[in-house]
Length: 77
Image 1 (spheres, one colour):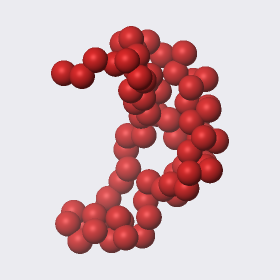
Image 2 (cartoon, helix red, strand yellow):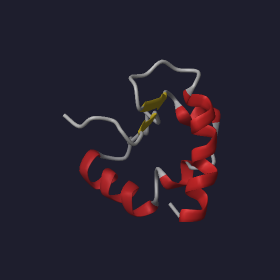
Image 3 (cartoon, rainbow, N blue to C red):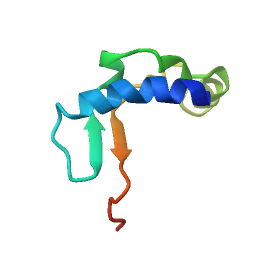
C-alpha cells in the first residue's frame, strides 16, 4: 500500500477502534471492510490471487478483514 494512503486508511481505524473492546495498547476493528472499502484493492492484487488460485482452486474468498493495531508500549510475549 502506498505510504500516502496508509495515513488516510489509518485514521478511520483509529476512530472506529474506540467502539470495540480490546486489551491495553491494542486496537481492534472487526470487519474493517464493512466500514470502508478504500483499501480493498490491496487485499487481492492479481499476483496474490493467481497464487491462491494455483494453490487452492478458483473459489478463493477473502473472509476476514479485521484490523489489529499494536500500539507502542504493548509488551511482547
